[in-house]
Length: 403
Ligand code: AMP
Ligand code: MG
Image 1 (cartoon, rainbow, N blue to C red):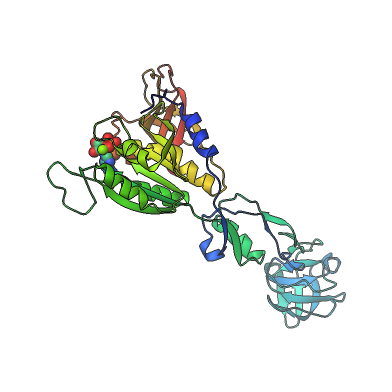
Image 2: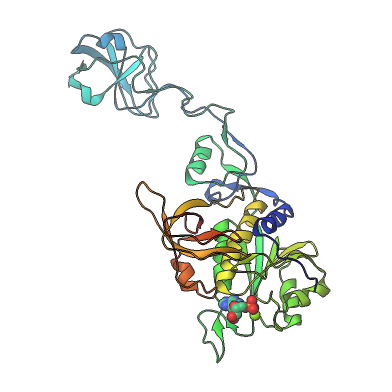
């Protein structure tokens, strides 16, 4: 095995991202577009509103007719949403109008219902109207040809509603990348089964599956594989045409860490192995033939932290979207010792305090096997290599773990 220096975390991520290309694109109906990433700008196919519309229930009037109040106007007709008053409004007239109905020709203001009294076919306007009041002008929202949504946008409910309003029934999005993964370990059984003596339940398959889904990928769970080179090769072949293969465990230097030795005969081409971070030093990146391969450490916290830092951005890159990690400043809740040479991702709670920076308090135990600590953590405190000791109250950089 080639000896390589520990690679800095940022450089490792940059090398992974630089090696990946976006997936092909596909048209999907709006009902399937939530959370997908737009592959091309979405352009408005119509103008909204299509005409000047009333923004209120009330009366369409000529504002000049209401300058002296109370003003008595003759109700000449009605304009409900989906209908229209088609004559021209004459001086001294009003049209009963409802929200969303087109403004009659000749009218230039809406008087809201609450500012009127009705006496048969006469409406008494009690407040003078300003020209243009309560009217939504044609094209206020968008016009035909306007760029409504930019390429690369991860589609929110509001984005999808806007696409519908722009009269787009489908959107061109990146195909969800298929992320195949398996765990290695003779000690592992699936959740819901009875572990034998010396066995534990595999948490990584479930955790990585969820992370892939949350990032917009399509998980292909290849299960649990024995610490056996032939079994590892068989599992890797079952990845088929996935966009990436992720191995979990067996990436380190122990006698039973077989991912590298098993896959080398299948043509594993290693870009790097071992990065300068904690948790998760043993991390493999390379290619198995055409397929990018990411080998994550087996310790459950290491696996999920490394997946957050490397796999999630990779899934975002496959979808042509932004890959930035959204770190932010926080105030340290309790002291941290000086850091050694590896970038440290410290599990911490994150408390939001009104008008101040949030408070990041490190968990007292940082064991990389402890999922209870990770599940309670609101963030990871990012400690650069060789960071000096930090006192409570100092400002640190954190990576929030929950949206
Ligand atoms: P490894 O990276 O294979 O040396 O595994 C490191 C530690 O993580 C060992 O204690 C394993 O038992 C544990 N581990 C490996 N894979 C999993 C898994 N899928 N779920 C839970 N723990 C695991
Ligand atoms: Mg193992």
